[in-house]
Length: 364
Image 1: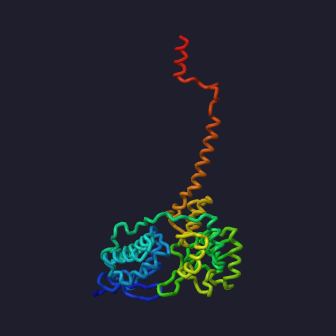
Image 2: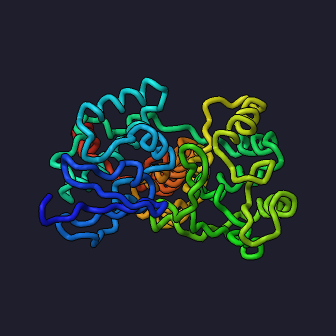
Image 3: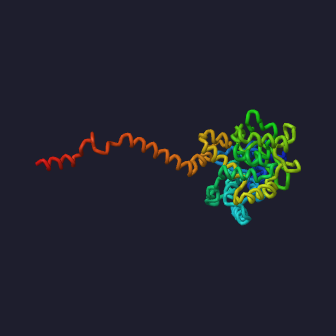
């Protein structure tokens, strides 16, 4: 383009490139996944505007959304067409990616492309599949406290504290895998969440802030799991303040796939549980917090959400809790009705109009 400079992007690794406009080379979609990136304003040289996907209030995605998009689109933003999006989505579903994860990833891609369109990098958003961003997955079951206890006992000793924190502090996998010794205060019974880890395609890890500002939080630790955490820190965590709390048996950062295959699935099999994902531990913890009487604001703070949408899912209460409420209402109503019920012999009760008419007829 004559007299203008191509917009510039900077990846999280500090690599620079030019995104250009519709028919020019654009920033790879992967540069935006889960992290900040910069795109210079068209016709304004290198002056850049910070774009953060987590600032989008309706974009409440978990870590599972990043990998499919990272590996599925190795092409410039401006080169993506509607046919590419349809084929990419079909390939995800055909490969066994869940409908829920596919919907989340589609919403992420659509948000990226909307930003690109707003900035003039593309003429039209290619994400135009009706209903593709809707999550129709059924509500996941949560574990009972008894199931949590037996699962913890069946888990390898090295990772029992990991399971306990996931449940009773509602932490995400990425937050747990990024915890350092200095983040855990056993005396004050708190765990500080200020970063998360993402596994990079091809190996390596990226440590950065949680996916939203609300994700940075201080979570109170229930007293009953403090002994397990103290034992874990003594037996499996290095003494340095910056040492990772949870690592592989060789001391390396945790990889979700390895943990799932070597420790998670065997523990589930041992206790006879099937179809339970590690993230379901967080769901279980959220449900327990709601049942314990946490308010909406308290739920949002504990979960690390700025929007009440996710917290409201757990505020409906369990079926058992619903029955308890209904039974209590019945007891209150019966007690009140019993106090106001007239005597069975009719003493002190004013006769009805029909009764008065019958009495007058009998007298005559």
